[in-house]
Length: 220
Length: 220
DNA sequence: CATAAATTAAGTATTTATACTTAGTTTTGT
DNA sequence: ACAAAACTAAGTATAAATACTTAATTTATG
Image 1: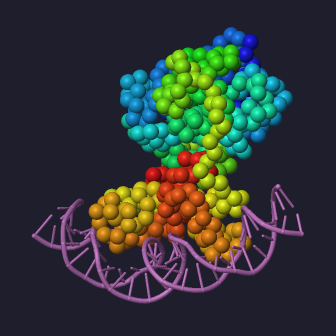
Image 2 (image 1 turned 120 degrees about the horizontal axis):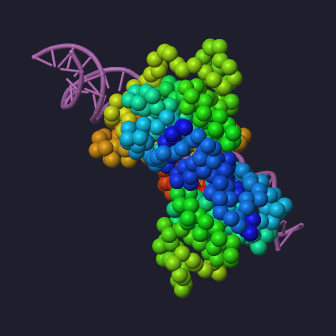
Image 3 (image 1 turned 90 degrees about the vertical axis):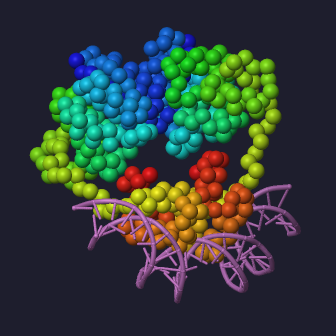
């Protein structure tokens, strides 16, 4: 019997997965969570075999949840669900210690396969992203299984100060330096400097690249 | 027996709804579509009783689909699914002729209730938005039922030309005038003029307001 | 085919952003 | 308490955006 906890902020998606899984004998959804923090609480309480977790969630995103689960509840397996087949997300999930990564567009069969594989101690990464992963890790993998990362997760190539993060978030709201300055009660020139340093650190040269990079590194 | 067509770009969501609905006797999902255009084709072919359609979809959004279905297949009922309880979406759905509007966070019970009500010629709008609607239409409504709009859908307070829509979409990607000009092979000055006219028409004075307004009116 | 609407683009003045550098003033870590 | 890091903000020069206006071509539509 596989005991599962579902974490996704949409009831409908949870219901869907639940219906899909419980149609299968040997799988039970013992609890649900609608955000990252709740997921951690629920896991601490219930100790499921597998956590199925969406990346995009309020309070705390799925990847952070996976990282924490791996740290504090090493025996709980994690299967990440995502709408995106972005390399960034996949790699981050692996680094966070996820046991599997599935696209929301996956079929029922693939879903069940992934869950059972993960529950039995295996790894499952959807075929759509396997090629990407392959190029990053050299292993004797069979088709959809890969070994977990052994090396320490490589840290971001930049570190932002508190103030910079503040300014970044305002810049991402497309506010101009004047408005940012007013909002933070600093001079416009100071806002400019922070923005300038931000652009340097993130190695971008315009707003478009900034927003893309920020999204890429989840600096929202 | 109610015959339903599902249109949503996520297989998982479709599977979820399907499982949820077919659990109920008297409801059959006869076909599915993963984007707006496909939805229209599927409807032309199958003539279902009800179309359950997500707002956010590739190719053509759910509201446009509803409008077209209402025009070309008046006997097909439409139930709009959305993640957002935004007034804009609700009002637009009603104007497009939707018979119901449900949040994705709806419970199974509410879902079934909405579907059966819509299928039998009624209207169902989720309680979360009823208050909003009430303030717009004065009718002798019972709880969750409202009358359809009789007046012509009020048009947007601005109309954009083809070129302006093109430029708008590039502006929304945060591209600057130079890049937009290069991309469209026009002079930078021309791009500036179009952007200027855009700002005037939408009555905004900076990028932030522009993106907000564009989102508001679904001008993505 | 004629007129309106749309697209193109230049001119001009003013404001804002960019790309730095320098430097004084907190804050923070050990 | 002392250095390092962070925050603040000024100066300067150049580039780009803003806020218009005018006006020459294209393109649509009655």
